[in-house]
Length: 82
Image 1 (cartoon, one colour):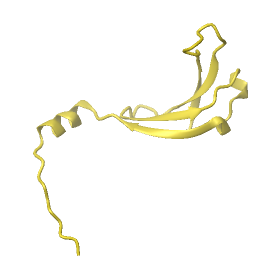
Image 2: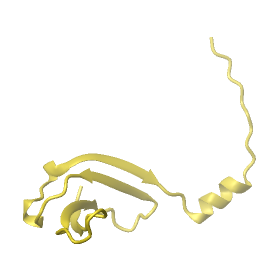
Image 3: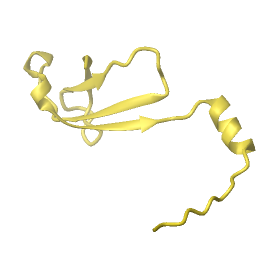
């Protein structure tokens, strides 16, 4: 996986120096996002992939899928379990 580094300010102390965090690069797919959980570092040179502690996958449906889901009929199917 490729990632880029982004400098982010501390939301609790905007005057503090920014720290560097990883952000995934997925191209133009756009409906799937990865959220990388990482520790911040003082400079981009200090960051490496070992700083990434976890990954969350977030799916956001596009407008066409939302429309199809909104207009669809849901049927219940009962399955017998043996």
